Structures are given as structure tokens and as C-alpha cells.
Length: 520
Ligand code: AMP
Ligand code: MG
Image (cartoon, rainbow, N blue to C red; front, side):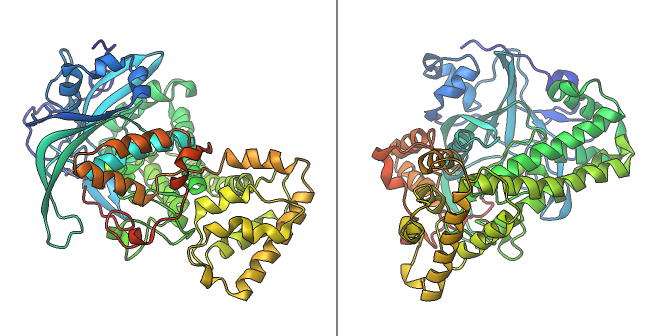
């Protein structure tokens, strides 16, 4: 296995001088050196051929004993120095102090084809940041991260990537619903890749400790490595950096809204500085379109991270980042302008995104109300978001009365459709037909444009759960089937039609399918 290793994070940033793997506060350092834990019986379950290529590896490499050992933490490559990153974060609205990589260990950075990737193991054992945790991950959450990060990539959503999924051979104790019923589960490790795993919380921790010296060191490093197009670090560049992070964050969240992804834990330690979807935990996919939905039972009371609130939470998190960067920028007005722009851009981009989902090319003032009325209608009865928008592509502007029939399949309970609701839908379809008459493209052109933004296949919550249930019994075929399916989410794939279906009733209240916690 030949890798072009070029470590920058560890060679350019301050290290924690304490080499002991004990839980503690780590100050004046960006990371601590750690060695991954040896596991009793490592076994690869799945490897992404695309990500192998990104690192300059082949499928033959992936079959080697060395690959298995490195990607499960059982061997440290020569001249590499694994480490855990120090960061803080606001969790559910409150400053939580130091968090850090409690169960993620970065192995090394690989440069290939002018791109740089940090290779990180999730679930490879304790670090100084493990707090009360064991540093491990279980199979179910690892399958969820592995499948979802790749699915997101193919949906066109900025995300970290996944390289491999492996069993450790060890058992891990988890109380899934935090209700006093701990049980042993299979331990697993995902190796994941990103140009950087820096988070908003990476900057917040230095600001909270008033360590402006290291805050600057980290920010300069970030700009030189990942935002070099902005120019040499200076006050002005810092501000531009903040503006770009804000733009990228918004862009990512608009994509989430488009595909119906709910992250579940939008704490500032889970916000990538590169605007990538990161830390797949109790995330979920909208089935019934519902702005109030969150899959995370830990957030059931306040629903802070519900679908409709994600754009606001992105902004809230950017405020925290602004506070952290302020000592280096010292221009409150300019920073506020960036945050205000987020709000106005959100309105514009959200409208643009919804227009694209409806296949509307031109911009008409009344679209905003028209879209709002649709969103209200979608929430009157449980209506599957993915099926609704995908089938809407078949709408014929000369046959408005067929509208309801075309989207019929999206309704979970057809008997809930009272005459009044039907009338409301028909009135909306009449408006849609009228609106489409003003467009210059044909129905079939519109359909193909809509199909490029309205996915046919997403990783529905129950689909991941089915793959998990099988994997628990040692059958990994469904992991591969879903992995392949989700590489082409916008294509018809008639052989996979069964995955273009509403969530089955059994999954409605099942733990893992509709109820998830932070336990992973
Ligand atoms: P999360 O909400 O999953 O992103 O995790 C928040 C913090 O808790 C991060 O600092 C994680 O590294 C840490 N953490 C989560 N699970 C564990 C675990 N099993 N062992 C140690 N640290 C953990
Ligand atoms: Mg996290």
C-alpha cells in the first residue's frame, strides 16, 4: 500500500506536549498524539472503490492485511503520528467547554491528484477528549454514517466521505434509548475522509480560553491550507474567510432542505469549517413533509434541530463563530453584515431551490406565496416528500385535473383526504398548470430538469435499519445493495423500484427507523 503522506495539521500546528492518553483539559494545543486501540478480530465489511482511487489506492490494496490493520487502528504506518483534535462547542444552545475528538483518531494526510485528504477513524478508542465515553462506535451507527455520507455525496450535497467500514471484533455496551437498558453491541470503525475536520468549535475553544495567540495560529493555518484563494492572512482576509464560511454553510443547508435531510445535532462542534455535512449521528430523512420533524429523541422536547429550523440553526452557529473570530477581526459592523446577508441570501436561495423542485425557470413574484401554499398543503395530511416531488415531474400542464392522481402514491393515508383537502389540492394544481403555461419549456424538458434535483432514492430511515438488522446477523449484502443504489439517486433504476416507496407501517415507531438518540 503506497500512500503519498504529507502531514500538515500536525507539522504546522501546536501539539499537546503531554503524550499520556489520559482524560484532561488540553490548552494551547490543537491536538494530542494518540495511538488507536488494538482490536480483537478486525474484519472489513465494505470499502468504497471511489474513495480508494481518491487516495491513489487500488482494490488490490484494499484486500491487503495492511489495509485492514491500518483502517481498524491495529497498525500505525511508519512515519505517521495519529492524533485527536481539540475543540469545544455549543451543544443545544449552551457552551459546553472542551469536547474534542473523543472517539475519532486522525491517522495521516494523503496528497493525491492535487487534493489533500485527512484519513480519520471513528471508533478507534479513547483519547484525552473522551470525557465519560469509551471512544468506541457500534455497528449500527457506523453503517449509518458509512452509507449516508456517500449517499449525500451522490445527491450533490457537500459532505465528508467514507472509505471503509469494519468490525473490530469487540463488544461495546450501549443504552440505546438512555432508559436504563444497556446491552452489548458489535463494535465497528468507519474510516472517513475530508480535506479537513476542523469545526466551528475548533476556533471557539481558543476564544473561550482567551488564547488569541493560538486562535490566530489556527486561523492562519486554515486560510493558508484551505482558503488560500483569499490571499495572505490579514484582518481583511479573516473577514472574507468568515463570509465564505457563512456562504458555504448556507449552501449546504439549502441542499439539506432540498433533499429532506435532517442532521439531528447541529451543535457548533458538528459544523465543518469547510461547509461539509459532518458527524452523521441521529440524522434522518423526511418521509412525511413536516417542518417540525426531528429524528433525534434527545431533542424531542424543544425540537431545536427540526427540519424547518436548520437554516436558523446554521445562522445561530455562525453567530458563535463570529464571536470566536471577533478578537482577530474587531469589526462588529462588517461581521453583522455577513450575518444579515445570510438571512437575505437564505430567502433568495430557498426560493430558487423550491422553484427548481417545481421545474420553474422564470421568476415570478407570486411564486413565494404559491410555494408557501404548497408547503402548507403538504403538511395537511402526511405526504411523502420524495415521492411527491419525484412524481410531480409527470404533471402535464394541460391536464391539471390529473394532478392528484399523479401524486396519489405520496399520501400515507388516503382516507385523510377530505373533500375540502382535495379541493385545495385541485386548486393548487390549477395554479401550477397556469404558472407552467408561462414557461417556455415542454413538459418533458421540465421533467428531466426536475428529476435532476428531486431524487428518486434517498436513504430512508427504515432502509438503513434493514441493512443494520441484516448486518447484525452477519449478512452484509444489503449494505452493498444500498451503497450501489444510492450512487445514482436521480436515475430511475427500475430494478430497484421497491426502494421508491413510502416507509412501511412497521417502521413508523421503531427505534432506529423513526426514533434515534445520540447513543452511537
Ligand atoms: P457528537 O454529538 O456525537 O458529535 O459528540 C459530541 C462529543 O462527544 C464529541 O466530542 C465526541 O467526540 C464525543 N463522544 C461521542 N461519543 C463518544 C464516545 N463513545 N466516546 C468518547 N467520546 C464520545
Ligand atoms: Mg461530533
